Amino acid sequence: MMFSIFITSQLYAQEEEDFDNPRMMVKLSPLSLIDIFDNPSLRLGSEINVYKNVSLEIEAGTYFKDIYVHKLNGEGYLFKPSIKLYTYKGTDERSDKCMSYLSLEYMNKFQRYNVKDSISINGYDYQKKYQLRRKVDAFSLKAGTVYIFKKRFVLEFYGGVGIRFSSTKSDISQIELDNIIPEFDESTPDTYAKNIGNCSSINMILGIKVGYVLFE
Image (cartoon, one colour):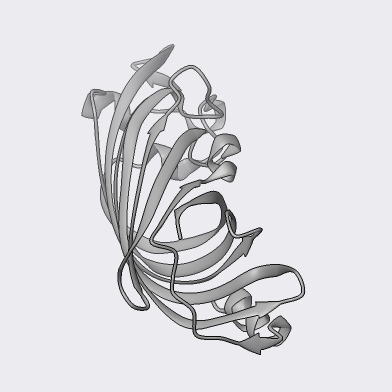
């Protein structure tokens, strides 16, 4: 899946060309506004061409505290710098320019949110809402394709894979944590959202961006 969009762009491209990369593009990640897994967030980015086919992109975002799916009252930030190497540039029947790239991306993310559990201690059952604080660092390899329409409007598809390291802390006591009642758990269906401690996992990436060319 990682390279599917990259390969598809090669099949559809009509003619390879050698043109200059846009000097600067600004972008928005629309799918983050309706993210049902990580909670909705606003993510804006800027890509600057630094040398021939090499560009630097920086994306920053903030989570909406009052709009949540299963991380209650979540808030936080996200920061993602990446370096891109454009390996193909051409034209096709759908756009003025078509550019495919490979990139290395680093992500730093912090979230603070609440979850709720049912707890039983010495025969006394009660519900408790408690706060989790999670820090995530991830390193990923991405592939994608950028389409430019009417010399200004940008549409980007990308996918990737990498590794993520997370550290989660909570204000719940160890006694309460050990006595959570799983069968009456009314918290998030995403069990990852409630994992406390340090862990590593595969980081899968798939998305789109829309944008505008500020400087050609």
